Length: 108
Image (cartoon, rainbow, N blue to C red; front, top):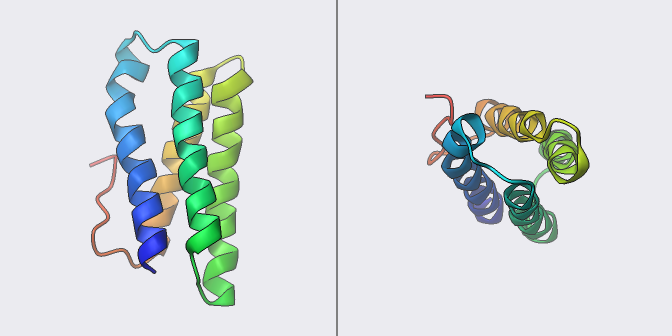
């Protein structure tokens, strides 16, 4: 599904671009909130536009739920970097379980 690939690719790119600063600093509270907002836009896009068979849709919702949990921690958690890592882990699950010919692992 093109909408799924686009939205997940945008989330992946946002996370990859942020990881160096998350690990090495500085990545401010405002940066985490902005990153979570950017991910939220893509989650909203995917849920509004993606059309998958029922089984695949159920698996996608598990991935998106993990991304949302990570976003919540990025916005208000005590360890915002852990929220970012949770979102990255969920994106890696997407890459392993969905047939996306353009997907490149963040952990490469």
